[in-house]
Image (cartoon, rainbow, N blue to C red; front, top):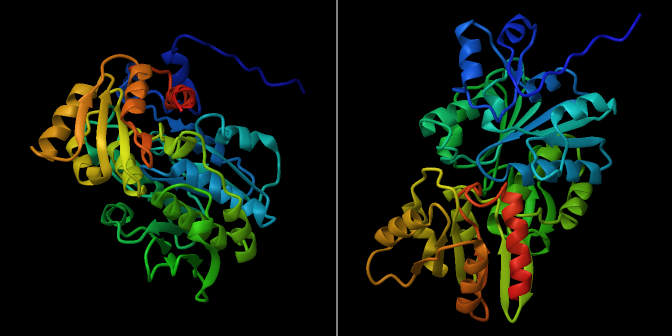
Amino acid sequence: MGSPRIDVELGRHDLERMADAGIVVASPGIPPDAPVLRALASRGVRWISEPEFASRFLPGSLIAVTGTNGKTTTTLLVDHLLRASGIRSAAGGNVGGGLAPAASELARSGVPYDWVVLEMSSFQLSAIDTFRPAIGVVTNLSPDHLDRYASVEEYYADKAKIFENADDRSVWVLPQGDDAVAALAGDASGRRYHFGGIGSDAFVHDGMLMVRPFGDIDELIPVADLPLLGAHNVLNALAAALVARLAGAQPGGIAAGLGKARALPHRMEPVRDADGVLWVNDSKATNVAATRSALASLDRPVVLLLGGKDKGEDFSQLAPAAAGVHHVLAYGAAGVRVAAELRAALGEGASTVVEVVEGPLDGVVARARQLARRGDVVLLSPACSSYDMYESYEHRGRHFATLAREAA
């Protein structure tokens, strides 16, 4: 018997062939209102996402991680903690920067993993059918991608699809006290575990990370020994530790793995500490909530670099988090609106100075160097996407890191 014939077409969409296909798999980069998808919908043709298709062939049990911020860190940290505990695990999905493969690559690997941990974006969840993780995680929820979605409700509706096929065997790991996530989960079937506060299943007490999904409290490591920068990464670590424990990892392995965790590129990544000034690359913070979280996690005065491609969010929401920021340097396509909304929200007489810097990031970093004082953090946490100047947030982050090292 010969090999099956496989035809590849690039640069066009053959609607007739697609309409006749048994399965249509759409890239998450194609928006739902794209002409090709509208044409298929008009013919009654449904499509699925790549991880939906891959999940039907994945070895091992499935852990799916979604949310607005912290998805990649949590996904890779769960995989790291499982491996540190001697469990065969792999991470993949919507993990950017080449840090993990696509779900389909894991499905094709043939490796008998015990667990596969997938990061799932709202775009990928929008086109699932039978996708059902054994353990599902929602890190947090806040407005994002309003340049693609007509409303925040539409964005949340796609996120909610992670619960669509829940049954009594489903396990959910959710942030304690997050009303938006609770509403998202609704009355979905399955057992629920929570992280982030005293009384939850993973929490901090007396400076120690702890989990207790099975009743007894397991002490892990002191928060001071966690190598990840920022309070939001403490939450990511709690979520990952709880998931790993539920997946069978032992406390000793989890503790060892947490102690060896490393910051991911472009996510509160310390770049250089020179002359008493710490330069931090948080280029992955492409929405207001991520930047707000970054600011809340720092206990030093900040020079904040804010701007990029405008995604339509309300920048005035950053004002309450700006107490420790003595200068905001607004730049890029969104710079003027960033400055106007922040100034209005801060009001006259505010201690935070908001300044618009025209031109490329080189000039913004040079201005930050002039303003930074000993003890300060110069933080690139843009609250915007990068596409006004860069190919990706990774591209932006690498350029900032290079400029910061030169400036320092």
